[in-house]
Amino acid sequence: MFYQKLLHELAPDLNPAGVEASMRLQYGTLNHLPREVFAEEAKLAADCERQSPGFLRRTAESFGMADEFTAWEVKA
Image 1 (cartoon, rainbow, N blue to C red):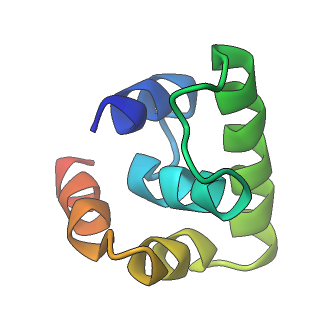
Image 2 (cartoon, one colour):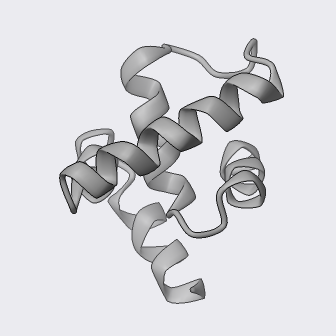
């Protein structure tokens, strides 16, 4: 959840669970990444979502993060 709070701060218009899941496509673990990488990956996730609506939800679901994704939608 720490990553999702940071991602929500960096990209408040995106579902942070989906952004985290999309980052996990590229990186196995996230704790070694600097903040700048999180910011760049949030931009990349936004581009992917624009090009393929539903990408973030599908990616979160594929990583077993569907409940987290839905929880952020409820908060929004």
